[in-house]
Image (tube, rainbow, N blue to C red; front, side, top):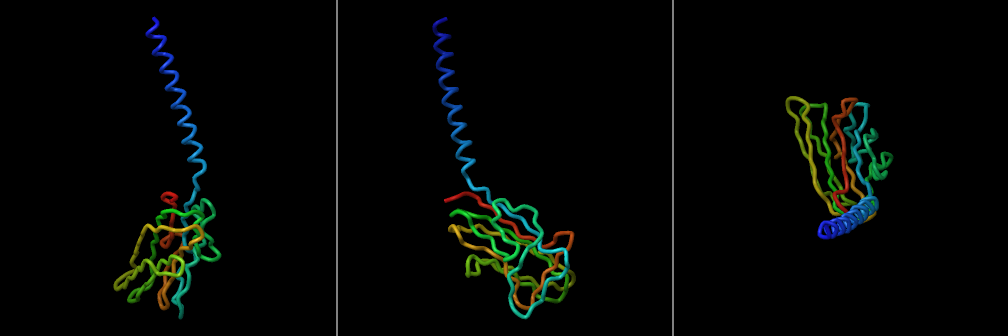
Length: 166
């Protein structure tokens, strides 16, 4: 009987320790920034071509946790230093044209997405992981002479989220 009582006491002590660890993990998780966005471009159809490059401004909000993407400027701004994942998909409704969309980190072009559509509109997707500092910006640029297309079917969109803080 004494042995069972001792085992019960030991088990209760381990249970309390584990309960404290769970509560600590919950506190740590609650302190982590919640950063994710997903935006569609427009319901208006074709955007471009323009005589100069433009920053694409995605206006259809699917999610914007942390309010990290600004649809008025087209800029994602990193709220914390960390590793971030970005992806985008575009379509151009025209044929026999080039479509060039670039992803910028601050003022540096870090990802190019080129396509030449010959027979029908083609969808192009691209993605990457970037290490960002707090305050860094990421955005998409539509190259001069290129266009993209979007409507209520959400063909053209831009996504990003924090993988983990550093």
